[in-house]
Image (cartoon, rainbow, N blue to C red):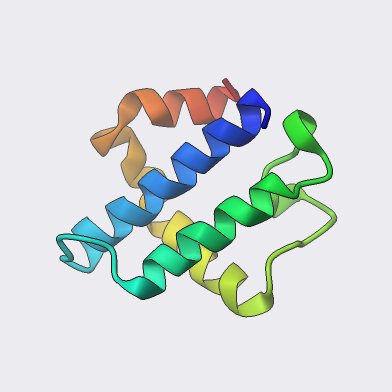
Length: 98
């Protein structure tokens, strides 16, 4: 996979973990959140745009199932702004598209 896709996978994994640990108070991911992470990685692997992919919210092709899109959207909405506190380097790289 390309560099951008690998970076997106790391960010989505970090956001899911941050959400589960800080928002839900979990020490480790439950099966539900592991399945969501795996689903997100599979969707990224299959992205037809590859390294030229836009941000998912700006993409014209919504490749997530509606239920999964709602879950990941809630996680990103909560974890996104907090990434700068908990993982500033990853947050800055993500914002800059590196």
